Image 1: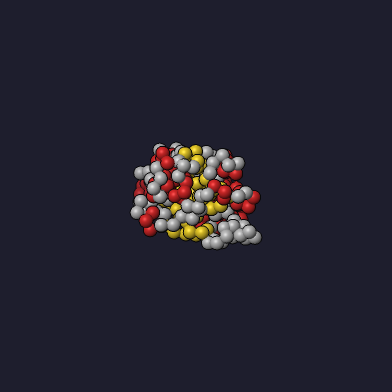
Image 2 (image 1 turned 90 degrees about the vertical axis):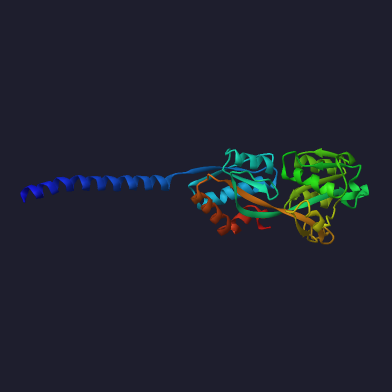
Length: 289
């Protein structure tokens, strides 16, 4: 009996020691996990663009509520480059237009906001529709951007090919400056309502917005576009600008992630995006649209 008790004692002590060590190790790992800071990269767009502004606002709101998640906002050429970077695992997150061809390693997290097709033209140029752009100089966004990719099927639908006008790829600010100085006759850009540069141009210069109709026909080649309107007074209620509801089309901005990103992080980011939408809107008004 004494030998049995002694044997049990010898076995019990190591078990207790191992259990204590295991508990200590688990506690250390738990503390490390709670204190761990995850640094994520978010591909957006040009520093003067909407994606970049939204990314900065999102990063700030996430930091306010999830201090263990740091989002570094990267300036890029736009949707197509962003999707490639996600697919190549060069970034964790990206904002892209909903028409962007998806990379195999990308997964959509959330719809962010609609992006409106804006076609602007000088009022004294006798341009009242997209078809009237034949023979004109048109400022478009840089190659690789979502706007650039969408411009060509839109213009082709109205019977215009690359040799029927001069496309002038420019960054957003330079494109607007070219339109306001009459270096180009028109400008095409896909962006959410409320852009300050567009509003200022419509208020101060002889520049107008063109309608985009034939939505059902457009959807035959651009199935991802949706019919919408730029409401009367959206850019200025006093003028108003536009003077009446203007029919146009839109796509959506999407937040996508590399499929290898930890699902718990994806869940946390999604929760912050929707639970703190009001705070996000306070940081960037475009998030409300």
